[in-house]
Length: 80
Image (cartoon, rainbow, N blue to C red; front, side, top):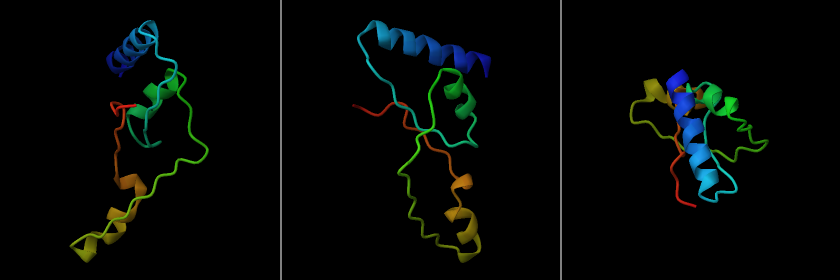
């Protein structure tokens, strides 16, 4: 985790030096990236605006598929 946090810090510093004025990252609280982003002062959105519409093929996994804790998201590299 230290190496990942270090890389995030380097990327943020490089972005600032290149003129960036803000950075946005998505991470759910149960994701491993969440504490790394928090360490670099990313904050939780009050209204995440996240909604997953899932329709599993196998009804036995419907509960797990619909639970947000079953998913990991990454949007660290979205274009502006």
